[in-house]
Length: 217
Picture 1 (tube, rainbow, N blue to C red):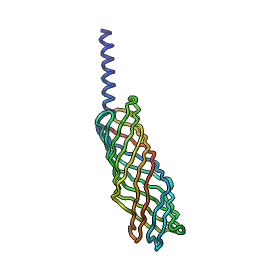
Picture 2: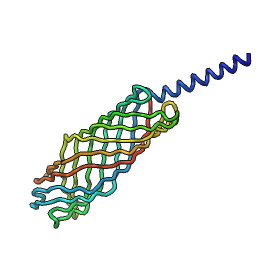
Picture 3: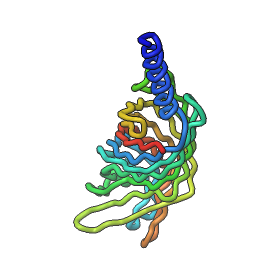
């Protein structure tokens, strides 16, 4: 009887472990997340910004991002993710070396599709890497000076992104996710929203450190 009890306990523990790992491995999930956004300064060309044209230098400060995604893991390793993200970074813009806008922001609203590969390390910690394509619903820059604001925006650009991170599984359904992400858009063109003028040739390459909460169902 003792031998049967021991075998039963071992079998129960084994089944519980396998069931727990399978919950972590496969299925649908939803993930809200927030992060800190950092971006290098960029340069471009301004045309008829308050009747001034010339080179444009944009100094970018720290910012933040927030998003929501849903995804599906086909097995323990391979998954796909679809999501939306808003991002903004503070900016200071210099046009033609003599006209300065000391405040503003460089922001975007994007949708993305990522492929993910998760590594088997242990039951709780699951590092992963991924890459994907990004569609820009809107990207804009606001130029602010003495209480006045000029806005220039564009849309429909296509970029790419790469990420690496780790999932920490707190339970069968809840995980915390830590991720570093790089996004790249080149040669962005922005037109005046309520005024004439345009800004072109800008790059958009933020690096993000973000925290997400994953619910698997």
